[in-house]
Length: 205
Image (cartoon, rainbow, N blue to C red):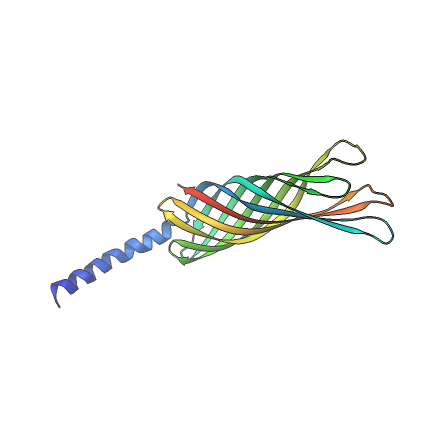
């Protein structure tokens, strides 16, 4: 065997443990980061009249915020937990009032598969709490704000850009249940849904 072949085999043998160690240390440990993207709130208002009348509204907005969490690298899989705080711009308009979206708190778990040593394909889900305000009421009542509990689920992809820096893109769907509002002919039901596409960057320790 030539000295060149021996050198190549030796280099490969030394590089293999190093590559494995690098893969094991990706997506492992605590992180903190920032996120921004597009968010669309969708609501439907069903009146208590006979027959019921349903009015739908959707509003796009710019979403922004931050997150912190912890990942556990299990080899080919990654498990993690994350808490995030986001805000958004814009509001939804109904004929008799505006519905403004405020801050949102998410606490989620995620599970993913390492498609490459630097690339993680994952799904997430967990608890979500969003603040909404009913404003500009035609009855001239004061604005009413409430925090609504719900859930969020989604999927995304995260990639290591450097040893301690990663970037991601993900889609999330959130449901915040139904609300009962006073209305002509009886209570009206307001339903809350949200779609979001977010990008983010994480700094890992």
